Each structure stands twice: as structure tokens, then as C-alpha cells.
Image (cartoon, rainbow, N blue to C red; front, side):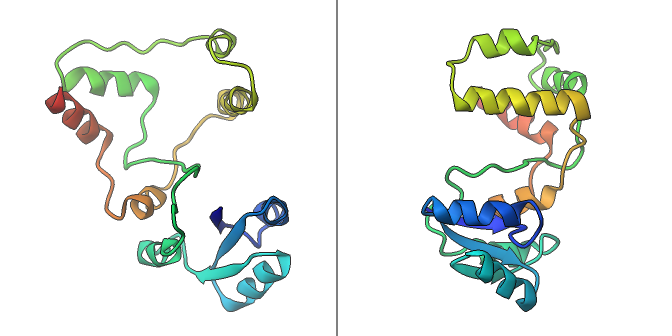
Length: 165
């Protein structure tokens, strides 16, 4: 498996890099400069790519030649204009002209419907984290780099879904 790692020389991801290598991953470290490239290689990265999260063109270049470059990835996908669940339901109602209501399912009730295992455990941890700390949104540059284009708005996404149905 070939992995593009962002933050490979940082405190957190830098600790993950040797673990990935130990598990057989071929790690390409995204770094901002040559000094960090040397550090990433010393930590076990097989290769480095110079890039900057504020420069989508450099990210496309860094993703090149990674084979199934997005398979099994975890990305914070966001488009301009982060909304909460109530606002999302309102937008989802407007586009097709049908009412959509936001409801909250208790986490334990939701988790009980899923098969036991590491996937469920990870999702439960993530949702507890969001319940405690919130989800302020993210940076649409990641989504732009993954898509290779500017992301559409949430309203635009619902509009396309309504037109397709």
C-alpha cells in the first residue's frame, strides 16, 4: 500500500509514520521544504514530495503516481459554508420541495445497530469527540485537492441530487 502522509515530520503524524512502515506501507511524506524531507526520510518515509496545503497545485503533484491514491483514505471533506444539522435539513428540504427534519439518535442506539468491531469502535470514539468538542468545519483546500476542482456548495449538492431523482 502506498500512502501520502501529511504532517509526517510533526509530533503526531511523525509518530505514526514508523508504525505505517512497520506494517508494510510505502510512505510518501508531504513536506514543505528539503530540511523536513530529510527528517521524514530519517523517520522511515520511502520518499518525499514537496507541497503546501495552501497550494492545491502542489498537492495534485504530490498525489501523482500513488496508484490508488485515495483508496482507504480519511479526508475531512467540506465545502464553503459549514452548516449544522438543522441548517442542513432546511437546505435539503428546499431543493426537492419536500420536508426534511433533523433528529438526534442517541449514540448508543445508533452503535447497537452496527456490527461489533474496530470500525464501529472508531466511529463511536469519533462521534464522542465531536459531541464533546464540536465540529467546527475544515479547510476546503483538502476537498479541492482530492477532487482536482473547486467543491460545490452543500446547496449545489442537494440541488443535483434533487434533479437526478
